[in-house]
Length: 217
Image 1 (spheres, rainbow, N blue to C red):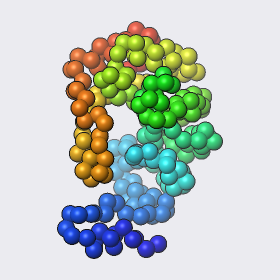
Image 2: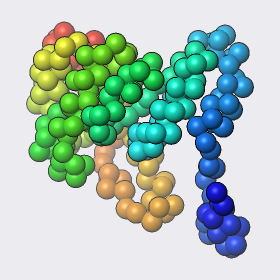
Image 3: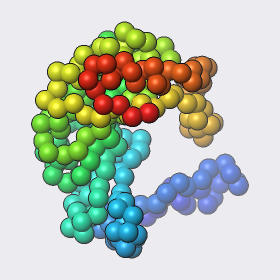
Image 4: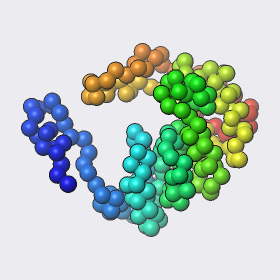
């Protein structure tokens, strides 16, 4: 396939537009990754499919993951969980671990801030937890969205209903994405959000731990 975006970038004045990345087939990418196979063996490392939302290209991702699995390379999916439930079985079969970005369990709050419904997200999480795949939840604490004690307790109450309780990794909100405003020509709605107080992560971790949920900060 002709790389039209590359030709456009070449024709534009310097720095007006640039090409980021390149096109791969699943086989090409898997082949490039396996060049580091010896390193993975020594370090017990592997490959993480991240994004954006990597499952937006699920056919490519699952094909590449299957090829890497044939080489016994560890494969991790970092995802928002916002994809068709029909893919859960394929994810569980072709990945070794899922880092699941939970955001929030409150459907109204989730929709207000993301513009989407979280029912499919929670269903996918529940189905993954009923499989054998390793699942860790990633919860980024965003001031005014999911950092209050009420927010945390609602998330903890939900986690206690699951078939198995995954480890929760707490991350602080940051504003690094503001640097992409100009690149994408879009305003970053959280640019004015305050930095997370330094004591909030351990305080939040204790709330989860008091509910019997394992947490890392």
